[in-house]
Amino acid sequence: MKLAYRAFDKGGKPVDAMIDAAGLTEATEVLRRQGLYVTEIVEAARSAVAGAAQKSTAKGPRSGQRLRLLTIFSRQLYVLVSSGTPMTQALMAIERQTENDRWRGVLAGLRQRVEEGVSLSAAMEAYPDQFDSVCRSLVSAGESSGNMPAMLDRLSVMTRKQQRLRSTIIGAMVYPAVLIAVGACVLVTMLLFVVPRFGTLFETLDVPLPPTTLVLLAVSGLIHAYWWAILMLLLVTGVGARAWLKSLGGRRTVDHVVFKVPKFGKLVRNLLSARVARMLGALIESRVPLVEALQLTRGAAGNSRFVEMISRAEEAVTNGNPMSEAFADPDLVNSSVFEAIRHGEQSGQVGSLLLHIADFLDEENETVVKAQTSLIEPMILLALGVLVGFIALSMFIPLFDLAAVAQTGGGQ
Image (spheres, rainbow, N blue to C red):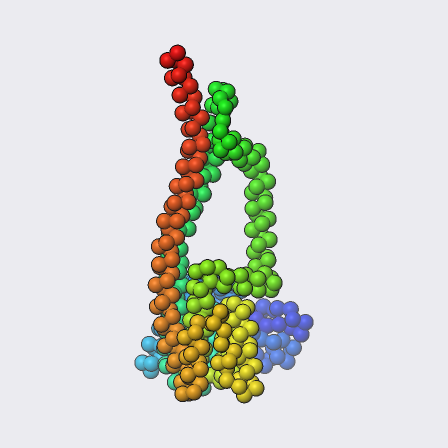
């Protein structure tokens, strides 16, 4: 049998080659004796699928697309497994239904590893960009407890709610973003093409110009003369801002400042509170050890202040203290989350209470997002109207003055 494999030598250099062996076990043993660490080995006829899986590992779907695909995958796998379908057959069925080539490669890699005797959670570890630590932990909990359908159902519910909230936020911001983009294009077009024509006309007529018109002509002339420098400045600023935001200091600064913004800061706090509550509740309900659940939630918190808070909770639990003490920060965590954790520790129902609170916060957050965006839209329209009106008046006021002077001269 001819097999295609990917491995790493003792120096960490990747090796992609072929080997003849009676089976996967024999080939793996031969390569191990040669000092190679095998990460993937498949039949040569299936090497194209394996290549697709490697490609998907190197560059997986975007965050929003990954969440959507994971939601569909977990739901389909739940339906198949709960109906008694063996795991390999369930993965094969989902693989055949998938239209995304990269995602199909990921599923093919999962199926191949499961066929080789690897657990599903261990197979997912080869694709960390597609299956995060929380997802893998829920699957591992299902494998350990023997109740995989329930864990898959819990995973599908969690990802579906995350996707729904994400879609709500993105959908609410589409119209304001389109308004801003259209307004920017209109303003740039007027400054580049309309205002210069008026400037030439004013020079020909040699009429006195009001200060607003002079400022507008100066801005238009500056853009015409140094458009290349402005583009370079915008590009450098964008690259620098992106690099700063990716740095530890930049992220910490933004994470602290975002909570200080009126209205928006409270919304961000509630969004993060709901996210942490849902993840922690799902993990605790899945019988994941509390310290491990806190570690996984901390890794998926997405905000440095929340990371520090969860780290304090983890330290408290390690020292035998209640974790609710770390969540007693009304400026950071929604008070309902703190009360759910405090009462849950007393009644032994932390997980279920956190999930209920997360459902409530998600519904409230959706309402707040729609309400705030409905207020943003008229504000953007008003700002655009003022800018366009300012440009129009600055251009036409000198013409009105010129017409008034002409009529006065004609009357004399």
